[in-house]
Each structure stands twice: as C-alpha cells, then as structure tokens.
Length: 226
Ligand code: CTP
Ligand code: CA
Image 1: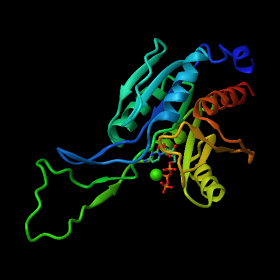
Image 2 (image 1 turned 30 degrees about the vertical axis):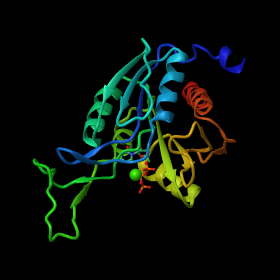
Image 3 (image 1 turned 180 degrees about the vertical axis):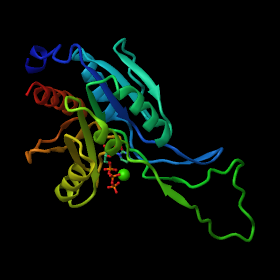
C-alpha cells in the first residue's frame, strides 16, 4: 500500500548504484576478493527502477543474477579502479549515488604478468599491497549541493562509533551502517542503522534487503525534497 502510492516517486531522477565486491588481480589467474554477494546493491537498483528512476548499476563480483530491466543500465567494474572510473563518469549526470559495493581497500602494488609459481623450498609468500582510492570520499568531495551521496559502513564491532567516523571523514550525506559480524553476506535479510550529517540516527528493525532498499530510497527522496 505504502509502496504502491510512492510508485513513481523517482521519475525523472538518475541514480548510480554500486553492487558486489571488487576483484583485485594478483596475477592473470588469481585475485583478492571479498564476501559481498551484491544482493543489497541489486535490490536498491531494482527498487529505484520500480520507482521510475533511470538506474546506472555499476557492479563488481556478484553471486546473484543481474537485473534485466529497461530502466537499468549495466556497467561492469571488476576492480576498484574500474569502479572509480565508472562511478565518476556516470555520477556527473546523476542525482543520487548509493555506494553499496564492497570496494577493496588494498590492491597489488604490481600485478604479476605471469602466473606466480610456487617453489619446492618456499614456505611463505609476501604480497605488497597499496591503498586504493576511496570512491565514496572522492565523489562526495566533488559533488554539487543538490546531488545526494549515500555510503554504507560494514562493521563487525563498535558499529555506531565507526559509522559516525565514516560519515564525518567521507562527507557522504548519509551512511547506512550494518553489522556484518554474522550472516549478512549472501543473506536476504539485514538490519541497518541510518546516520545523517544533521546528527539524526535511525535504527531500523531487521527486514529483507528488498524492503530496506525501498525504504532507503523513499528516505533519500524525502531528503531531496527538503
Ligand atoms: N568505499 C569506497 N572506496 C573504497 C572503500 C570503500 O567507495 N576504496 C565505500 C564503500 O562502498 C562503502 C563505504 O566506503 O560505501 C564504507 O566502506 P567500508 O569498507 O565499510 O569502510 P572503509 O572506509 O573502507 O573502512 P574499513 O574497511 O577500514 O572499515
Ligand atoms: Ca573497506
């Protein structure tokens, strides 16, 4: 009922959503990845399309099928560098960015151009990693005042303290904090807390990721109207 009334609330809006985990190559056959399934980001992309938005879905490694929808344009972005490039390019002409992707924090200093071989007498392997660029922070810094940037915060401990720090340091309008200490990855459900720059903190009850997606978009939209 509630959702049906708000059906086309995002008509005329363009929204960039990132989903899934990035893959950072080690060599031609291996990568550093993470446990993100892409379910949250894909749910947000689909909900936004259902609400009439034009959606640009920038995705890394996902474990569920990508949405097939005339209002969702798909942009593969396997690595954090690919994702940064696509997000910057698409957010230029968009109203909202939602960074649901699990972007790698580190990548190889140098990707090997051949498959790394193990030696018989070798017991350990050391990889040198360098920090990736923070997409959310970089985009939030450059956005214009009527664009809205939403980040996530995945925490296993000190949820509010860590999420508040991310809100402050990244300069996003909103952070969706979730406790990933148990059963979130690949799950259909999640429990989130929304933090805003004005200090508002809303703890939402556990819901399906689809419900969170719709609620979040309605929330972001009401925020734009103000
Ligand atoms: N993020 C990003 N670019 C990165 C790393 C993270 O845009 N290189 C975004 C994520 O998409 C998410 C938010 O920043 O929206 C928070 O990601 P998270 O991993 O929870 O926080 P980090 O700032 O990376 O800090 P840490 O992993 O140390 O907790
Ligand atoms: Ca991180």
